[in-house]
Image 1 (cartoon, rainbow, N blue to C red):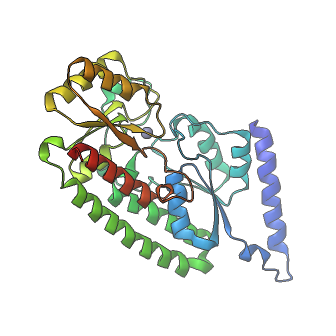
Image 2: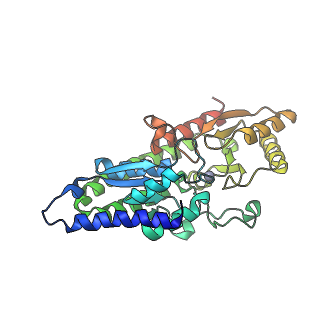
Image 3: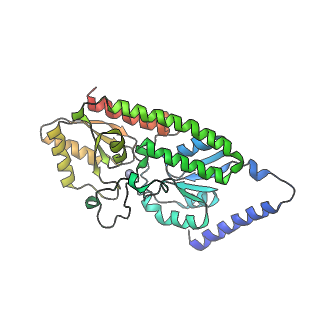
Amino acid sequence: MKPVRMFAVVSAALLTVVLSACNATGDTDDEDQPLQVVTTTTQIYDAVVNVGGDLVEVESLMGPGIDPHSYQATEGDLTRMENADIIIYNGLHLEGAMSDVLEQMGERSHTLAVTAHIEEDLLIEPDVDLLGDDFEAPHDPHIWFDVYLWKYAVEAIRDELVELDPDNADAYNENTEAYLEELDELDEYIHGRIAELPESQRILITAHDAFGYLGNRYDIEVQGLQPVTTDVEAGAAGIRELADLIVEREIRAIFLETAVPPHGIEAVREAVLDRGFQVEIGGELYGDALGEGGTEEGTYIGAFRYNIDTIVEALRGD
Ligand SMILES: [Zn+2]
C-alpha cells in the first residue's frame, strides 16, 4: 500500500474517534468495546491474551510455523494494523523484513516493542562474524527463551494496556500477577529438568541460534546451525564443524525447529553418520513460533514445557 493511501485510512479512523468523542449523549459504546490488539508473533499474542483476558481482542499476524525474520506484511496485515488500537511486536530486529512497516506504523499508531525497556546488559550480543556486515541488530532478539526476561515483556504489555484503558487497570494488574506466578513455576520447572541431564549431554544443537537465552539462564550449551537470524544460510563449513563437534562430544540428539526448513539439520545428521557416529533427530522444537491455537503447545508455557521435555528426553537417550 502506498504511504499516501495509508495516511488517508488513518485520518478517517482518527476522524471517527474525534466524532465519537464529541458525542454528548453519554454514549458509552466505545468503552464497552474490547481493545483491538494486533501482535506480530504467536508468543506475544499469548502474552496479550493472558494479560488482557476478555477485555481485549487479539490477532496475531504470524501463525504457527512462521519465520518472523523473513515474514513480510500482507495488504490485509496493513489494514489490520491500521484498524488496531495498538500494535505489539518483539523488536530487536526479530521482525527483520517488517522493520520499515513497523517504523511507519509507529509514526501513526500506538505501537509497543516488548523488548524496548529491557536493560542492555541483560541482552546477548551475537557473534557478528557469522552475521556479516549487513546485519543491523546488535542484540539477539529471542528473549522469550529466558522466562525471567519474558516477564519484562509481559509487564510492558500490562503497562501499555493500563495506559490505553485505565478503567480496567485492576483487571489487567490482577491477570498479570497471576500469570507472572505461572511463569515463575515454569522457570523452576525448566531449571529442574535441565539439571537432570548429565554434564556431558548438556548441549543443545538446533536449526538456528534461537536458544541462546535458554542456554544462558538454564545452564546448557547452545549451538545453532544458522545464526540468530535465518537470513544467513548455513554453509558447508558450518555443517562440518557441527558434525565434528557431535562426534567428538558423543552428543545423542540434535533438533529441528517448526519455523525453519529441516534440510540443514538433516545435512548435519548425514555428515555425522558419514563419520561413523549415530546421532538422532531428537524432535521438532517450537523455536520462533508456538504451536497450533487451541492446543497446549499453542501457549507459551505449553510450548516451552514441550521443548524442555523433548530436549531432556532425547539427550538422556530415553
Ligand atoms: Zn529466530
